[in-house]
Image (tube, rainbow, N blue to C red; front, top):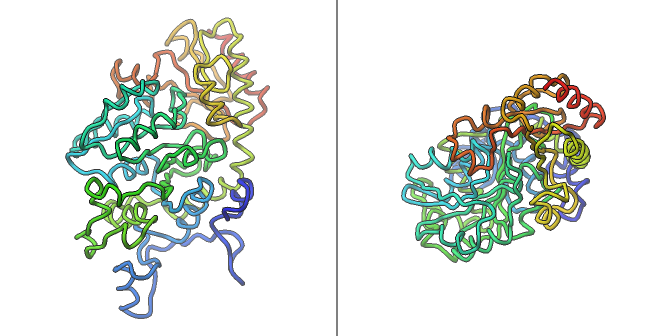
Length: 426
C-alpha cells in the first residue's frame, strides 16, 4: 500500500481480506498450526516455505499488524515484540554478541538506559553514552573497532531532546554500522526516520500507536537499506552460515529481509518475547485512528505549554513545539508538522512543589505511562528513573523537579483548568 497516503495506510494496510474472509483483522488465538504432511512442516523449519507453525515465533495477526507499522514507516520488514524494551533489546542483540560495543545517546528512556548501561553489559556488550548535542569530533571519538550500532530516540523520554539524525547517521555510516532509532514519541505520523538515513526503527507500541493504554507491545522495522554484505566481517551473524539454523546465510537467502528474519528465527525462537495475538488486535484498532489522535495531542500540548509558560509558579517549560525551546529548530527540520503530546516543566518551589502539585490534580492521573488518550503525569526522578544516580539523571536530562506531562486528547480547556487548580494548592 506504498502508494496510499498515511491516513489511508493507518486504516487499510496490513490486512486485505479475500473473498469470504472477515473484513476486520481476525485474532488467530492459537499456539500452533496444522499441516497435512510431515514434509510440509519440515519445509517451514528449513525456511524453504513461508507459513506458521508456532506462535512463539510468528502469528498471522501479529504479522498483519507488523506489516501495517512497516508500511507506515516505509520499511521492508517488521516484527512485533512483547514490549518496547524487548524491541530495543532485540534490535541491538540481533547484531551484537559478547565483546561488542554500541554508541548511544544518553538522552533516552530510563529503562532503556539501564538496559544498555547495565543489563547488556553483563552479557558482554558495552555501551558508550554521548550527549545528544555532542560535537561531530566527540561523537566520532566514541566509536571503537568493535562498535556494531548507534542508538538514539527521535524525541527523548523524558528530556524531549530532538535527535539530529543527519549528524548521528553520518557518524554511524562513516564507521560502517547501522543507525537504530526509537521513534515512539514522534510516531510515523510526525517523523519517518528512514527518510533521514536511519536504518532500523523501534517502537514501544504501548504508547501512541496503541493510544489507549490497553496493551503492552513493541515493534522493530528494518529499512532494508543497510548493506550487511559490504561489512561481512563485522556482521558475520548475518553474512556467514548460522549453525543453529541449518547453516543458513541470512543475507544470501533473504536479501533485504535478512535482519528481521534472523531476529525471528533466532532471537524470538530462543527468547520468545512475542506480542500476544489479542494485544496485536487491540494495537491494530489503535493504529486505525493514529492519524487523527496525534495532531490533537500536539495541539493540546502546545496550548498547555503556553499556559504554563506564563504562570508565576512555573520555573521552566520544555517542549520542542515552542519557538523559545532549544530544540525548536531541529524539530522544525525533522518534524515540521508536530512533535508529540508530551511536555516537561518544573516549579519554582522545586522537587517538593512538583510532587505536591501532582498530588493535587483531579482529572489528570499519576500513572507509570505516557502517550495515550488520557492526560497523565509522572515524576521521573521518583518513578521511571529512580534507579539512576544523580549523575546518570543529569546525563539523561532529568532534573529533580521535572514533571513529565503527557497531554491527552480531552478538551484543552478542561486540562488547563485541572492544572490551574492544582497549582493553586502549592
